[in-house]
Image (cartoon, rainbow, N blue to C red; front, side, top):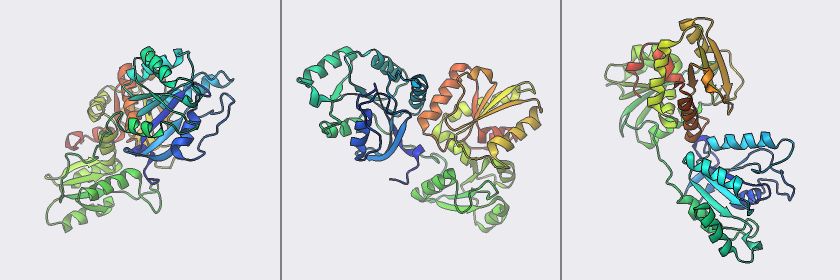
Length: 392
């Protein structure tokens, strides 16, 4: 469980007012002192993430957020951080602690608009004279079931586990869905250049390789320089060739006509985002000029390398095609501009570090702003004139 990447975990966020018991509930659920608990309002200043195994769901990440009514000097900034959490929230726990429900009702409406499955909890029932009457009253006011719990005594914990596990089915997806079957030979082309971590593989490579093994495919790996000799050693061409997008053109030139071709970035685009939207977004390349403005969004926040794909190679390719005057803004991690209307195109990485909910929230924002959005691998294939050859 501890080795499951954050991006593959279900993200469950806890929302509520200051002192509603969010941190106490996080500690109860994890069985650890994961968050500081204090009667002083505003103790939780930044989102706190904790990995755990949820009964009936598997590996999840719990996220404790600042109080919705934080009135401290930095309250507004903390609220902004909490709102960013919504973009990555797969399931929400809304904790009630006050008769005044204006803030909670507003958040509940936003959760409904975002189609985020939500469970409403009434905490501190151990302090109420008639908790069932309070629950019924809240259910009438909110128009939604309310689950009574006590983060202090643990009452209602088993019911909470069951309720979250059945709140909405967990989507099961495959990176290579429809591209290969059991027994197929799949060739993975994996450059080991200066930007490749020494002694290990990057996450998309590991994730793809593990899936192929789980699907009982015959997975072969080699660097681009050994592709020709690897193909020559095979009796028949591989069913599928998966390459790093940076060497798309070199690999495409050697790919047998009978083999399917794709890239790790394109696979991640299928897995994490809306691949059809990304392919359609690449059409915007036809309209870019030296006066255009492009946003490149990376999920990683690593220190830039000399040949970094998002910060060096892709901008170089774009400026070579459209002119040195092309304005390119680059953001990393969870940073993402509020005003996407400034851009003619958004190019997103494969997002191996993000969960699908966060990627799809960015797709939705670009769509709402009327700005095309695409993906590293899709753009590189389009710039090299081989997108029609790539299987997506």
